[in-house]
Length: 111
Image (cartoon, rainbow, N blue to C red; front, side, top):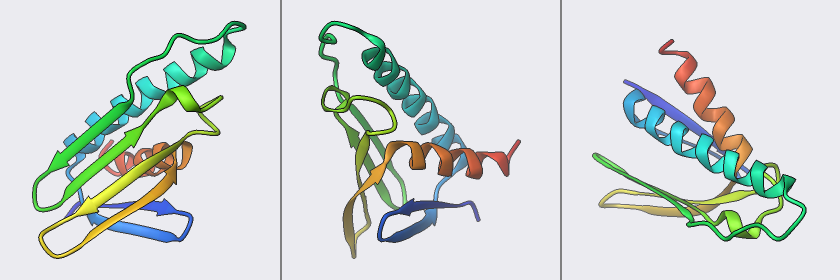
Protein backbone atom coordinates (compact mmCIF):
# COMPACT_ATOMS: atom_id res chain seq x y z
CA UNK A 1 0.00 0.00 0.00
CA UNK A 2 1.30 3.46 -0.91
CA UNK A 3 1.74 5.43 2.31
CA UNK A 4 2.62 9.13 2.19
CA UNK A 5 4.22 10.62 5.32
CA UNK A 6 3.76 14.35 5.79
CA UNK A 7 5.89 15.87 8.52
CA UNK A 8 4.30 18.71 10.43
CA UNK A 9 5.61 20.67 13.39
CA UNK A 10 3.63 18.56 15.88
CA UNK A 11 4.49 15.16 14.41
CA UNK A 12 3.56 13.46 11.16
CA UNK A 13 0.59 12.18 9.21
CA UNK A 14 0.71 8.88 7.33
CA UNK A 15 -2.05 7.90 4.93
CA UNK A 16 -2.75 6.04 1.68
CA UNK A 17 -2.05 8.33 -1.28
CA UNK A 18 -1.59 7.08 -4.83
CA UNK A 19 1.55 8.15 -6.72
CA UNK A 20 -0.56 9.71 -9.51
CA UNK A 21 -2.23 12.06 -7.00
CA UNK A 22 1.16 12.85 -5.46
CA UNK A 23 2.54 13.80 -8.88
CA UNK A 24 -0.41 16.13 -9.48
CA UNK A 25 0.04 17.74 -6.06
CA UNK A 26 3.79 18.09 -6.66
CA UNK A 27 3.12 19.88 -9.97
CA UNK A 28 0.79 22.33 -8.22
CA UNK A 29 3.33 22.93 -5.44
CA UNK A 30 6.10 23.51 -8.01
CA UNK A 31 3.91 26.09 -9.72
CA UNK A 32 3.16 27.77 -6.37
CA UNK A 33 6.86 27.85 -5.48
CA UNK A 34 7.67 29.45 -8.83
CA UNK A 35 5.06 32.16 -8.19
CA UNK A 36 6.54 32.80 -4.74
CA UNK A 37 10.09 32.98 -6.16
CA UNK A 38 8.98 35.41 -8.87
CA UNK A 39 7.16 37.60 -6.34
CA UNK A 40 10.19 37.59 -4.04
CA UNK A 41 12.49 38.78 -6.84
CA UNK A 42 10.28 41.69 -7.90
CA UNK A 43 11.35 45.13 -6.76
CA UNK A 44 7.82 46.55 -6.96
CA UNK A 45 4.72 45.22 -5.27
CA UNK A 46 3.84 41.87 -6.88
CA UNK A 47 0.58 41.44 -8.75
CA UNK A 48 -1.90 39.50 -6.60
CA UNK A 49 -2.45 35.90 -7.70
CA UNK A 50 -5.07 33.28 -6.95
CA UNK A 51 -4.49 31.05 -3.91
CA UNK A 52 -3.58 27.41 -4.47
CA UNK A 53 -6.40 25.04 -3.54
CA UNK A 54 -5.75 21.32 -3.95
CA UNK A 55 -8.35 18.64 -3.26
CA UNK A 56 -8.04 14.89 -3.38
CA UNK A 57 -10.95 12.63 -2.49
CA UNK A 58 -10.97 8.85 -2.27
CA UNK A 59 -10.89 6.80 0.94
CA UNK A 60 -9.69 10.01 2.61
CA UNK A 61 -10.09 13.64 1.70
CA UNK A 62 -6.99 15.82 1.51
CA UNK A 63 -7.25 19.57 1.11
CA UNK A 64 -4.29 21.93 0.85
CA UNK A 65 -4.63 25.70 0.70
CA UNK A 66 -1.98 28.40 0.37
CA UNK A 67 -2.34 32.12 -0.30
CA UNK A 68 0.94 33.16 -1.98
CA UNK A 69 0.06 36.85 -1.62
CA UNK A 70 0.91 36.88 2.08
CA UNK A 71 4.36 35.25 2.01
CA UNK A 72 7.67 36.86 1.07
CA UNK A 73 9.29 33.67 -0.28
CA UNK A 74 8.76 29.90 -0.66
CA UNK A 75 10.80 29.40 2.51
CA UNK A 76 8.40 31.51 4.56
CA UNK A 77 5.23 30.01 3.06
CA UNK A 78 2.91 27.71 4.96
CA UNK A 79 -0.05 25.69 3.80
CA UNK A 80 -3.28 24.87 5.57
CA UNK A 81 -3.64 21.11 5.41
CA UNK A 82 -6.88 19.25 6.15
CA UNK A 83 -7.19 15.49 6.10
CA UNK A 84 -10.47 13.79 6.91
CA UNK A 85 -12.60 10.73 6.50
CA UNK A 86 -16.02 9.79 7.87
CA UNK A 87 -14.67 9.45 11.44
CA UNK A 88 -12.02 12.16 11.90
CA UNK A 89 -10.97 15.57 10.63
CA UNK A 90 -7.53 17.09 11.23
CA UNK A 91 -6.56 20.60 10.18
CA UNK A 92 -3.05 21.95 10.70
CA UNK A 93 -0.38 24.14 9.17
CA UNK A 94 2.67 22.79 7.38
CA UNK A 95 5.73 24.42 5.85
CA UNK A 96 5.53 24.53 2.06
CA UNK A 97 9.16 23.51 1.58
CA UNK A 98 8.75 20.56 3.98
CA UNK A 99 5.63 19.40 2.12
CA UNK A 100 7.56 19.57 -1.17
CA UNK A 101 10.41 17.56 0.35
CA UNK A 102 8.03 14.92 1.73
CA UNK A 103 6.44 14.54 -1.70
CA UNK A 104 9.87 14.24 -3.35
CA UNK A 105 10.85 11.49 -0.89
CA UNK A 106 7.59 9.63 -1.50
CA UNK A 107 7.79 9.91 -5.30
CA UNK A 108 11.44 8.72 -5.27
CA UNK A 109 10.08 5.29 -4.31
CA UNK A 110 8.32 5.10 -7.71
CA UNK A 111 11.12 6.39 -9.96
